[in-house]
Length: 397
Image (cartoon, rainbow, N blue to C red; front, side, top):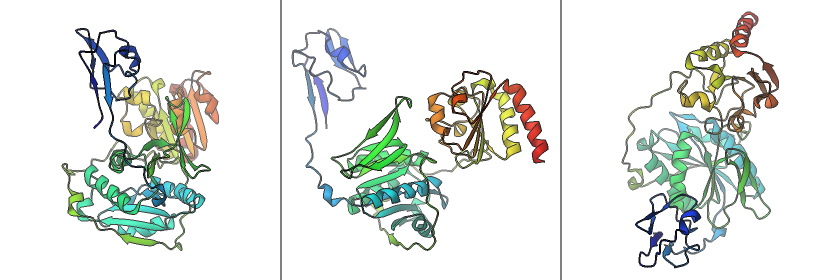
């Protein structure tokens, strides 16, 4: 295991290492440098030390992988209660494109209990092969057995690319798989492509969405990435597509778990899933308090839409996190998005700017959201929302 150590007899207390650490992981105690627990083993402090008092020991590098042994694009499909998550279809659409580009096959991994019937649906959406792990123990998602099963399949079949959704389950599952496979992982990608050398280009926002970073994984396999719901496009299902369904057998040792599923508690405040809604009405800091979200709820109800929120409103405790739209919430792509009292920070725009029509209601004519909006209403939302709701009630019956 990698480690770092300060040789006390060599340290003279010069403190040159302290500003060199980008993570504030070094402090001086009694004139001696001490490495704190938040050290990332980046090694930035080693060179500034003029007395060779800091020793960084890294794991011996493993043998280079035989990259030619890895073939195929995989999508880890997500289902809950026998219902497939939409992001799985979207990833199959992108996976089909990637697989065709590098002239390889597209496979899906389907895990659960009584889920074999969903396999043909995945084939209809683009998969050539579906690896089905169907076991009563896997009826409900648990980190350890699911990660062990996926990692075992990767070790056996050696895919070169593995994709999964950046959902609550995907974000919990796939880092554990990456660690077991000893490979890299790029989270929350907004773009995937193949370069001239056949490497997966994984593009994601960084520094609060202010820049876009494109990441490659040239020396390890598989190349792994997560993608948010509504970022990629699903292919129209083709019921005539033919594919292979492989029933995978896994050992009981892979199904062991130190935790157990107790129950799934549904969010009763969310009458319509914002990730799937065609109409979303979102409220932000401009609402002034949780009691005023009723204005947003009334407008959403009239249009048969869902209620969304900005991070500021969620952080203030005005509405549950499940309603949050944005970079740290959900990515949505409705036909109509109505932003009420939302300034339009880049983090929020990252989650809704692909909406077909955006209507922004804000009293500040310089609010950034108005530059993105299809239609902008500069006015007091406490006057505009009731009037708009009343008019729509009349027009829509």
